[in-house]
Structure formats: C-alpha cells, structure tokens
Length: 126
Image (cartoon, rainbow, N blue to C red; front, side):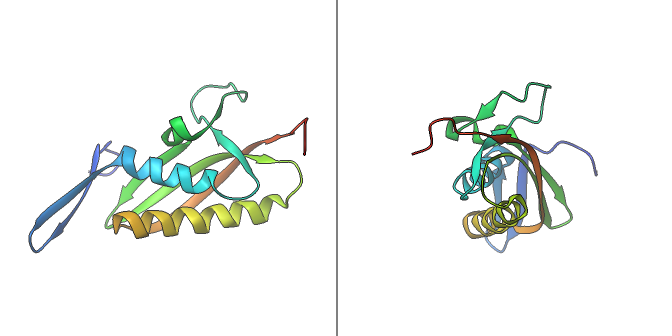
C-alpha cells in the first residue's frame, strides 16, 4: 500500500529476501550528505527549530525515505555553509547520497530531493 510506513525495505533474490531497515538507509544517506563539501549539517525536518543542526550521531533525522515500486526516494534536509554555491552543494549531495545508498544497499535510488533549510555562518573561520 502506498503511503504506508514501512520499517524495512525488502528485495527478493533467488536465495531468499534481504531486508534493510529504513533507518539504516537514512543513516547511509545522511552520512553521505554530511560528507559533502559545503554541507554544515543536517536539519531536522520535524519541528520549527532551525537551530537544531544535526551531526553524525543523528544522521537519519534529517532524512526521509520513501519506497515506490522497486526504487527509493530520499529527501535530505541540509544546512549549508556560507560561501560555496548552494546549487552546486545541493547537486553534489544528490550525487553522493544516490551513489552511497546504491553502492551499500543495492537499492535503486529514484530521486534525491535536497531541501536547503538554512545557512550556517562559521564565526571562527580558519
């Protein structure tokens, strides 16, 4: 059923089926986004507090996973650093997230939607 919240993403193969929790997929996606140059952090999509910037420990919180047919759609909510071109940062996030999820899970990634929620200004730049 569409719109149903699946805890696990499943794909069958000849020897049985493989189940990977959505949380695992979200963590992989979140870490790939965080490793992208120009990304200051992830932004929690829940609640109104823009100040809640997320690091590695809560990587799955700034990510939403949707499964449609045999592919995964990933929504990533990021904070960017002041400086680099935002559209380039976002495109790099799309690429990094898609390839990380495909390489580590074997799932096909239909789309990576990047929402830039804010700009993080580093006060003490080196």
